[in-house]
Image (cartoon, rainbow, N blue to C red; front, top):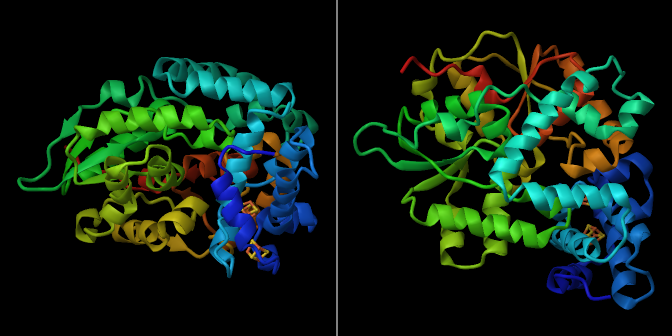
Length: 412
Ligand code: SF4
Ligand code: SF4
């Protein structure tokens, strides 16, 4: 079977020595302890597909869909096997061939037909808002109905849109002090359409020490990549790159761990060239910028009681950012508490939570216990996907916020 990106698959198959070290870290494998759930087993499936021993059918696609694309296997593999890249490539190859059923087909159609079109995305955000009363039925989080209608559960946990999309209400540029660096702000789809308050805070806090350029944007492309829609992801990356070539910014700043991963690692893969490499290398999480000026943040923290911070996989593993969100909150005067497994996967994984709601919630369950035992009154996490997962899993037991929502910028 010829898959879309045979290089990635071939490299992983050649490098894997089947040692099984990935079994220690895979959140999905921990649930079932079955070989096909771990990277080694999934690579064996890819080998079977490559050699023609397995058919590239719906069953193969379903087996490979049981992966969060979290990158833990890569990070902990003694042979540095690019397993996640191989699974991503296989997903793309299978998406174009295998009949994965009507739900997956509808999901792919929705992604391909909405993400590249901001107007349609806005309509979708409003439709989700309209569906909220239905989703808000008093269904327990693990009820069969919710699990069968995962989109309802997701809609129930979507934040309430705060009026017009951020890009329609914000200035194109916010001037900082004279001689300050120029930072390009990528706010991402969730903040733009559903959580503009986060974007407003980000822009104002960054402007304390920089001139902030609000970058025109399309989606970062991660949902398309996760669904195996490489061509859609390529279109989105090319559109973003086109927007940003002229922006003349020193750094590109985002405040969602998944967007940061997509811009840092997927943008240059999808649109190879010097411009993409340059922009990708400049990507920073906002906490990396704000934590450098702790005195600016003093006294800006909200008094909400002890806060536990969760590390999104993409932020910690792919950008190496873990201490900075905590340093930023501490500098603002927010009280932090330790939470066991703060760096463990929440089980969201973007589309994974929609496709495998029970498995996703099983992976999440220890996170809920750890949070409740930590004594925290609030959970803070810097990824829009993780926020949705925590909200769904906690079902109101604790507020789930972005760390930025715990900092109030000084009056303009
Ligand atoms: S992917 Fe890496 S850790 Fe897993 S079996 Fe292969 S070599 Fe070992
Ligand atoms: S990417 Fe994550 S979920 Fe997928 S096989 Fe690797 S460790 Fe497991």
